[in-house]
Length: 233
Image 1 (spheres, rainbow, N blue to C red):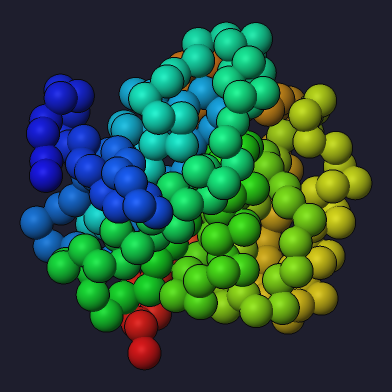
Image 2 (image 1 turned 30 degrees about the vertical axis):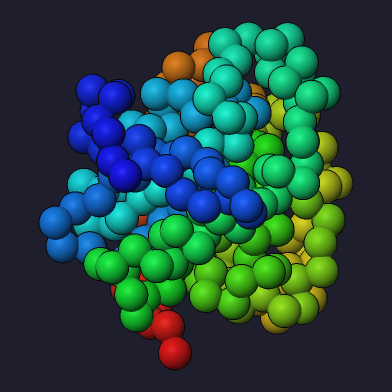
């Protein structure tokens, strides 16, 4: 089921979440070179993350952003904090897994492995998903970490982090990098001088255009080099 309710190039679609139904934003080119899951920050599935799916589709990828906030969108940090307090962790987990299954089954990317791009809260979910699904080949984490066992991961990892980040301490970033490396997975982390958390999101006051442009360039290079040589077995 697809209904264009956003005014953007993609569509809001419904997909299976456990025994229920979730919604997400799908943007897909006519000919796809692979699939990328976009996992939004704690704000919810706002226009920025929908537009990011459109940008990925313009690069030839079918991009899907499952809505982890059931239609709710926060515009301030305080609103986002309130939503986090009410988060249903089990439902969010099922939504991430359901989003993966939806994109995995999407006709134009059959035979391809999948990339995941996550932001802050969504970065933690992206890292988590890579430990659960061996067809996840490329994970890009923007200013988010998660202490996990990566021994079963088959992914390569790219991280973008702010130099001045009150939400993500350097010890967590370095600890994550080392844990991935100890699991013998390829990992490259970048730190951007003069930036703060959410520096990539152009609807936030922390937005840093030059750093965001560089991070986007690096992300596309990483996705191209990883997914374009990967196929499901």
